Image (cartoon, rainbow over all chains, first blue to last red; front, side, top):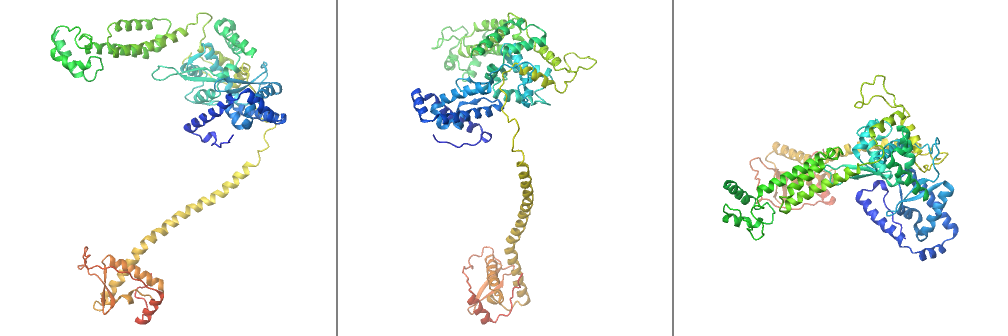
Length: 260
Length: 346
């Protein structure tokens, strides 16, 4: 497999990125074309040590890629780490998942089955009063929480104006620079969207164009709707079950996530 | 009645080319035949004149457009579950549709329908039949209280003006509590920090020091070069003028005695100067400011008088190539016994 050297992501403009995406899609397609017999034969080509070494490399790659919380694409893993070991990709990934679960207490979840992107989530349930990490990016969790709650409580889709108005009441104005969050509009519509916490889409048939917010794929897997509803209940001093529809949805998603 | 018919006929003739109704092509022909009676089953397309009436059609179209605008502008209002405005719009559209005969109006009707159904969908999704409602403003207020918002003593304003300010760690407090709802994987970082903190700063400093002097040098360079270049370009012209001046001075002193070309250009002290002189002389001759003539087999030069100058005097002009070598240069010096240069060096 030839190793093509490409310019770094910072210097790519849109057309380059698109063509690179197409190339990577081709590379990615070969993943699915590997038959099990090919995989079997390929596995015999490598020693157990080599495979373990490759597994360690993939684990490290994913851990570092996850720092920014941007989902990791299978094509990237293939291009940068796996390379020649493509045919035993399935075997390697199986061991990678096991390592994550047993060593780190993390789960590697494929959030988009079509585009094959992964995120890391915590396998362990968070305990009240204990901070998960001292990461400074944590500040934005509060902002994200507020937005996600509003979307969830309003049925899963809200128009962007509702979000902006709610934020304004929280003294966060998307038009101004915020002391802690900076360019709020950018953080919400770009950063959170890229991290797949939120989805920001156009509402069809609107003139001028309006946008709406939804939960992103990462949020679906990472956020516990039940716990979120609990917190909202605390804030309102109301029983979470009083929001029957939301409660039902939260319980359903809780059981489905526990089963995986 | 007949007036309106005539008017509509005139309108038909004008708008015959622009409308895209099915009967459009037939119109110019039929307008000649028309009488005052209604022509049912008129042209080959089977569309009666009544249905084709452009005024009526324009009316219908304009009404449709009004409805569409109304839906778009008053979107929020239509979505309000408290009223039936959306249903009213649909009923209006229904009535209008009864008069629609051709594709153009039907397209507008379809557009209106698309808008209305979108709104209908949104309105339906707003129906939360069960459970208590959720008010985002109240939610925001509760969040602010959670973040220990310091409300000012006199709460004169209610919702409009945002009184009070959030304390320092407000969002951090919210983040900590909200974290609890997330199953975020902790971000990977080295526990003891990175080793590589030291080397980069010194390198930057050295580079900066090096860079500064070179920038200044570069700045000096272009200005110097520019000056030299300018002087170089003018040098030839200046030289030529200077030599012309010399020639004219000599001739002015003694207008009778012709000046030998060789005596004039040769510099017994420098061969290169001689060559330059010959070069500059050739400019003078080319420009018609001096002339060279043969006398007794020897070349003589003389400046051209003001009046003698013929701008288009190409008839008398000859071309020749003059060459000189060091040997011949010395020979001429010996032959003519040239002691000093007639053209002083610059």
